[in-house]
Length: 301
Image (cartoon, rainbow, N blue to C red; front, side, top):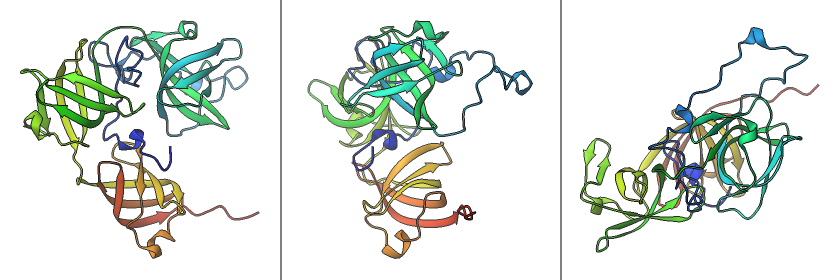
């Protein structure tokens, strides 16, 4: 994901496009609208610490950042608790593990491991567990419903009233029809569809026939954002960092091309920093970096 425009990093709020019943267009849309989003689905009963048996139960999962991935189940091994997923918009397949700690949902309702089938479209909350990709949550989508999502405007055709948005997961275009009932907003202010510039980040909600219900302008090229949190990735050769933003607990890739060399040399993974960055339509470019603290490295034994 490093070095190219990764719309996971561009998301201002967490959600991804989902075209239900359309092989995700083949986009990676987040379940929403008529079907409740995964985050609102009823979760299975939570185990209390006193219920944990160290001899019989698997250890709790480490507390790490999760990444949302949408794709198709290529192969499945229910005995060994593993599957191969073809992510949307990617050429390389991904091997994913799951077990009794994984939560399953089918069209927003609690499900079980047996509901996962080869060829299904799934959405996974993934994390690294040791050196394996582990699915904390698996959503199975089978319904043909409306959707909600997020992406970048490619074009608007005023004659045919069609807005084209690039899906942030697969970078595939989605064409949606604008009608007289479509609501377009910037914050709390209602604006015209013509006020949406090409390259802007938007969140949208749409109906089963791809009719736009609402468009919310999240960021236009030139918008300045402030990120504050821990640096989770530093590559000085490519002048690129990733920061886990505390306000929304999401990771953002930020270019450091405009940052002074004396500041670059101080950046380390684990450091706490404030970064002022401008969204240029392709990504975030840092204008100012304030290094707050660096987690000390463990002393050698």
